[in-house]
Image 1 (cartoon, rainbow, N blue to C red):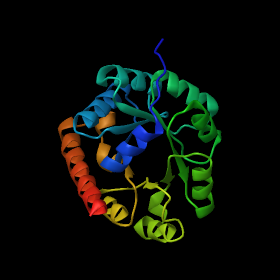
Image 2: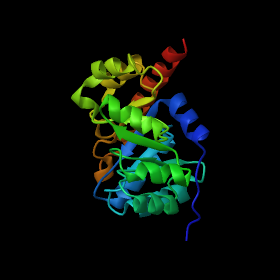
Image 3: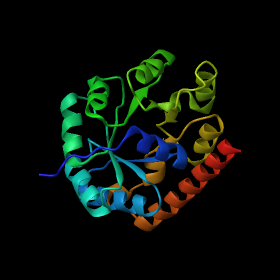
Image 4: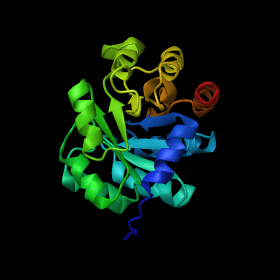
Length: 222
């Protein structure tokens, strides 16, 4: 049995704020998903979420941690229940992503796992932070786009928002310019790689997103 391990909130938050990018991997092919995760890590995307609706998701998490090493920041996504949290932690996930304010948020906090909690409305975003979320996953961000994030940050300038859902290269730049602490990117980054697609094309997309988020980080420090 794998030994569960966690990372401190400071580790997760520091990496999130420094790199400003989290990748989201889901797909019907466990081996392809694993190759995708390892390729993203190799290309300098340090935060990779494996959705629990991926084929053999827990096995992919275990294998990714084993192959990439204990310093890899492999997370579990689409985490809904307390049992999901326990199983993800046992598999080696070092951070948790929820799609909404579910029991998994409280369970993650109790387990000492950094958590990116899904929220859409101002009330949900504030509730997520007060419940112990390390950052607020603005989801689905595509409903309001960068303008909605800008509107949310007017009353909540200190809330760490991470827009997720339909984030492509262009909108990633806009979200970061409007004060997102990071962006979460799925298919515009992963493409068909988690279904057995082209890993070289994945590498090219990863390099582009890493560069854009690094530029956004530099602007944020200016």
